[in-house]
Length: 66
Image (cartoon, rainbow, N blue to C red):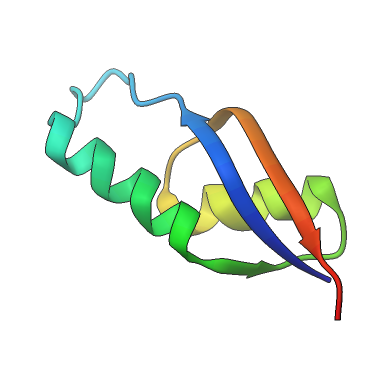
């Protein structure tokens, strides 16, 4: 199934320091611009986490009907 993310909040805090606001915005923009291929919501979250390198705090999305 294909998904489009409409809102996402990442956990940008870690022990190695934080990203700049510009870098955060880039990660969010790339996530919102991408059409994601996943089996279900849990797989979608895993795909985005792996691709971005950041854990997700919250997410809103919709399923693209063909």
